[in-house]
Amino acid sequence: MTEIKMNSTAQWQARDARHHLHSFTDPGLILEQGSRIIVRGEGSHVWDSDGRKILDGMAGLWCVNIGYGRTELSDAAKAQMDRLPYYNNHFQSAVPAMIELAERLAGLTPAGLDHFTFANSGSEANDVIVRLARYYWKLLGKPGKRTIISRTLAYHGSTVAGVSLGGMPAMHGMDNGTLPEFAHVEHPHWYVNGGDLAPADYGLKAARAIEEKILELGPDNVAAFIAEPVQGAGGVIVPPETYWPEVQRICRAYDVLLIADEVICGFGRTGAWFGSQTFGIEPDFMPMAKGISSGYLPIAAVALHDRIFDVIAKGGLWPHGYTYSGHPVSCAVALANIEIIAGEGLVERVRDDIGPYFQASLQALADRHPLVGERRGVGLMAALQLVRDKATRTVCTMEDNAAILTREACYADGLIARAVGQSMVLSPPLVITRGEVDELMEILTRALDGTA
Ligand code: PLP
Image 1 (cartoon, rainbow, N blue to C red):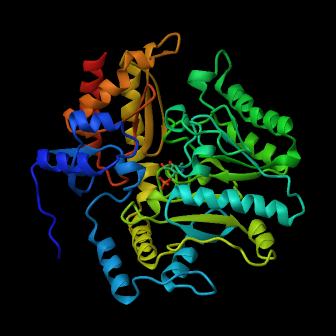
Image 2 (spheres, rainbow, N blue to C red; image 1 turned 90 degrees about the horizontal axis):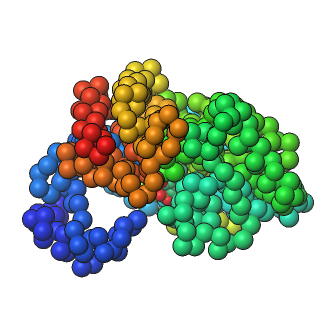
């Protein structure tokens, strides 16, 4: 085995700064402060290059659902690599690991979502859906139905189609809108946008903004609406209960396909296999990635409803694919990951035990802490909204810098949390223990106390 030579932190940082353009990072920060070098992981913790043990409150990037260090996945990868490291799933060929994964997924996804195509990332999965949705309408004789509606604060990936779908000013400001035929409506965050309306009324209003947008664009021009069941990277925004049923009604009424982006919500995070099941959504397409392999290898899948597949199947050659679509090693790892999630009852654990414990702990903190106006979340994804004034729901501003200060204090004290706008965001591994939730709460509370 090739050993990675261990360097001192300073050496790693210097080498990293010299040769790497960091994702989602100001290059100036890397030159000034250096990067954080993470060298290994076990369970819900990672270790940095100074040997410091850090609780990973973000499961990597919302993805290490089964936790770090599960050798079942490396065993599955090795066995598949030894048997067949690569073959493609194009031009009429298929590999058994991909066939088995598609079959396994069909047993977990909501009824009717029985067909799959594979990709390497959530971004690619959303790209292929944009193509598929437009192609579907073209085959049905409605080639004008091309625009995809998404939401402000949405995150659907970093490809050109992904950023056009996205709605986060900090992430997508540079090139959002460069592709035509994408439109946005307001994200359904009652605490910030709801004004005097009751949450249920605001949920209907937010959904009806989609209807207004469809009418403004003309239903004959709209292909699909895409949304995450719970907006993740935008700040764990859980819509009011009235929102999803109304969205569904509107999409059906205007022949607009519904895409539920499960890249974060899938594979147990919300306490069901998919966020669509938690919220009663019946989508036409479901992109999934991250938790499908717990991040151990890159792989993504797109579930297509039978009614979509039946049309596509009659269209002749489907001219799409990536070299690594349904890569056999990634599929074998995804299968082993799904066996762990199912075998250890992690979904039920999130729904009935650790999820409620996690949310209740955060709610207790939100109730008593002056800096926290709202706890929102479901299962093992949550956010705390930082506020200047709880009574008037006046949220902190970027100038307050409260979320970033809190995030940095957490990291210094041994917890990875994320700052999104003026919210603290958490999404720990599904295997996190109650003791580790308590540890997380202690560090987070100390950090918020220091910021307040
Ligand atoms: N969709 C959602 C909801 C996501 O959160 C992400 C990534 O965070 C993506 C799509 C893009 O996935 P990837 O980073 O694997 O391309």
